[in-house]
Length: 120
Image (cartoon, rainbow, N blue to C red; front, side, top):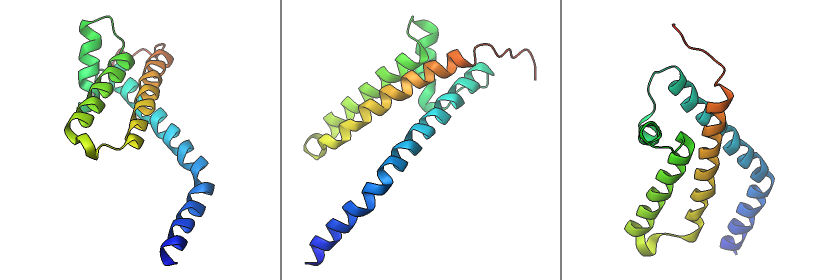
C-alpha cells in the first residue's frame, strides 16, 4: 500500500510541474546557446564542451551548431557502447535536446552577428 501511494504521489507531483520543467529546459538552452555565441563573438574562447565544435567549424564547412549536434551524437553513441545493458531507452531523450541546442547555438550566432566587437 505504501509503495502504491508513493508512485501515485510522484505522478501527481510531476503532472503540474511538467510544463514548467520543459519551459525551464528551453530557457536554459537559450541562455547556454547565447552564452556560447557571445563568447565566440567576443573572442574570449569557448567552454570546454563547445571548444571542439568551434574548432571543427573553423576548419570545415560545418557550423558551430551542426558540429555540436554531431559531437553530442557521438557522445551519446559512446554512452550506449559503454553502458550496454545499463543504457535505458529514456536516455535517448538526450538526442532531441542536443539537436535543439545545436540549432539554438546557430541561431544565437546569427542573431548577434550584427554586433561589432572592435575593442573593449
